[in-house]
Length: 314
Image 1 (cartoon, rainbow, N blue to C red):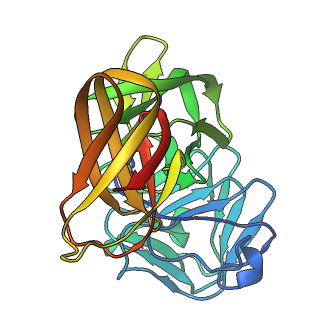
Image 2 (cartoon, rainbow, N blue to C red):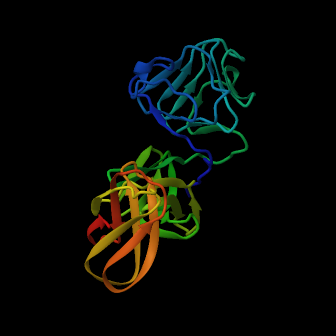
Image 3 (cartoon, one colour):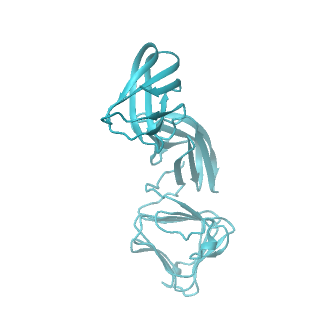
């Protein structure tokens, strides 16, 4: 089964793209030395050498996945903040310098979890506080791009993993399954997954990952929040301020007569929602809505259940 034991948000992933020193930007694919909040990946075949003491104790948690080799020069140490995790995957290596004893160490929140005196370590092995299970889910992200939401995640290892459900919610309480993705069943390699939500909700929405084992047991990931105020592509209109500036009447014409609830949204170009309401219509071809707030003149976008034909200011 795949355990979601990473409970903190690791904001970025730093992946070593060539062997080199930890503190050299050329070692890392995005030309940035790892730091706070990071998920740090050393792939198989890559060797990263600690040539200076790495002190991240002032940071939020970091997660280090070693599939290749992490080597400490003699006398160099790694001090990590509370909640951090170091996982040596199967095939990975953690090697000390030639000093032995405490010449090298990995500390988490001031407590040693490995020293050179413990000898070299071959995966799988894990160093973390109050954890006994392998870290499997190493990242889960949701990002808005050009009107769609890309959801991606990665696992370090999987055991008896049946499938994933990608779930979405408009309120953080009621969830719907938008896609199901098969798991790898059993794997000891880094696996990346991604799907696209091509019909995201307007305004704030929430995404989470449900992982289901072969035996039916399941776990949830942390939740990611998306603000989709930019996806208003049905109609563009110019809103002009009235004398007071506190009320604009907008006439919306539909492509065909509408009955029942119709959700209407109006947003500025920067994505800020200025009107959001569900109206119950009775075989209506058009409707007038009033925006009773102080808004500046400019171009705005309107969306009404994908049914807008045109809209203008009255």
